[in-house]
Length: 285
Image 1 (tube, one colour):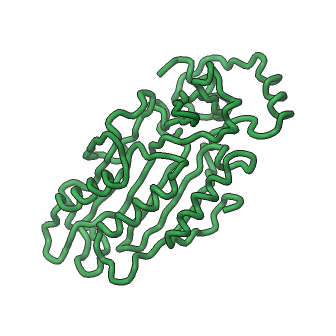
Image 2 (cartoon, one colour):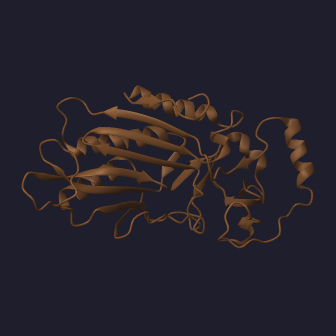
Image 3 (cartoon, one colour):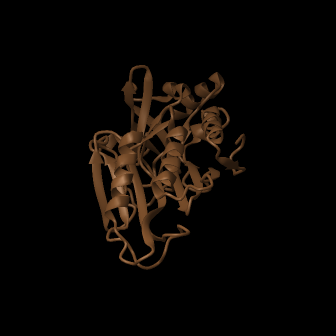
């Protein structure tokens, strides 16, 4: 990680060393941005993050755990379409009652916790190991076919020792993503467009910016700050009763003058797939 990526993080997190904030001239620049309207800064929400919640019940007669996985993966990719790409997918598996599908405390699969990650994430990204004893698989890219093939494999490999049980899954979690930046943030870039300053408490984190054609991307979390990803997704499976939680962590996807409409479009894609979006604590959703 470049030493110029962060500055003065006091009040945002206490475990990261800080160097003096480069404050000279920043006030004038910010005033000029405000006069021009639009996005004046990107900030990180470390507490009281807005969420979008949704639920879906699998169709009657569907009791296959892989079918439930298809519903979850399709929802994840529909949310992320043009907005974010998962860099890692985490899944917890469990032994389930064969008739009703609900997870059991005993027995437990040989390996409960699994992660599929891209083989070569950006060097500054730290993909979290969200569980102990995590089995990690790597692929060049994480598209629908790759994720579902991996899902199928881990469900088939984890045999349950008791009669009338079968392997299922209980959670799918995404905490590392590559995110497409709104066009309005282009004016905020620093270092010849290679860094995006993100306000965090009393300091600023500078995220490296990736460029692809005419689009700008950032990726997180940073390797020294596991909670710095712009989005987080958690999908819980209770015998085909699925609940989804999308966490919005950065201001452009929270503030009305940012990329809020992109979240509205993602929610509409989810609704079109049959998910019931629950009113949450985000305006306009």
